[in-house]
Image (cartoon, rainbow, N blue to C red; front, side, top):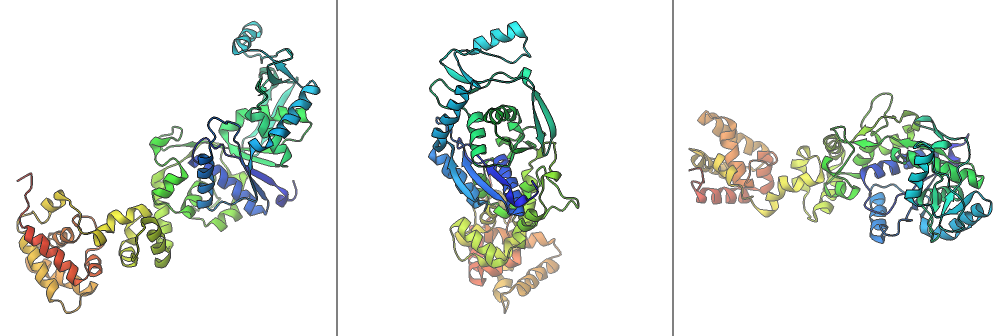
Length: 455
């Protein structure tokens, strides 16, 4: 095709569950190709599996695509709405003798192979009733894959495929081919697990006398251990990634690099840059590795690129809390996801955490209560309660006592936060303010020596 803008691609998920990482990457690759070329993307919901396809799953898929900001030009089209058209084509193939009705069972197929050889594809006879099978002609189906290159499927090894059940309901491979033809789909970009379906779909195209689209089968996703991606490798669905605090733009960037790369090995690419640079010619044939640790790193980079106002707005939406700007400002360098924020700074709003181990290690250490009392006096005496004066006051205690900084800083941190993990100690005190900081220190001092289980 000389004019890329004439391309018509489709993303066609089955609503039998949520949109997982592999499906999201397939949607993204289709979207990038289309948006980069000014072409057309069709969204089709392949709901021929009526038992497992549910409206709730459809809603989940649409919700995931919208959150990822992957739009489409036509649809969503539901495959089940094309049932009349499917029957028209089915009848035409039966009338033309290109398909036949068969009562053959799985046992009959096995018996045929026992007689003719296990590598020989099943060939049935017209029984006038039963399921509909497509006649496989002599020769071969050749998939000239845009990623994998040429793959040849010898017809002698292919069974006459069942394309409709005895009750007339059509099967997946038949419906897909009819729908792709009717929608004028020029390119099918999908996962490598669909490669085995391709010769069956090519047979339907050939029987219809139609030109098949160009296929491109994406490498499968594996975990860091080299095994097929599964729940054990981390978040499985787009909604789980969203709930774990990832940004849609970071996810787009990361999953675009799963199986695709650039000549200069750039990793941080804006969506506009991805649209400009993406192409199937740089998609690998080898499985791609999904590593949530790398996604976390990339998400952290994206978080730090946001303005304080933007990051605050996203965190307020994520947490359902308001007035977070100060806490965002002092914690943004320490978080990699939106979900990291509240465990780090929640004590500012909800009071100190109850971490007995942290108390025992810091305020419960010999001499720590006396140091904390000195900290309290120093903070109460400073003229201005800002980062510089708080820092100077605390460091003066460190120098006078000749101790390590943590001997002074950590008891104060635990008094304020209830735990040994928080944003910067000086910034935290200033954010809380003099009155609240001193109040929390007083409560810690009143508690006195810890009632540690280790004592």
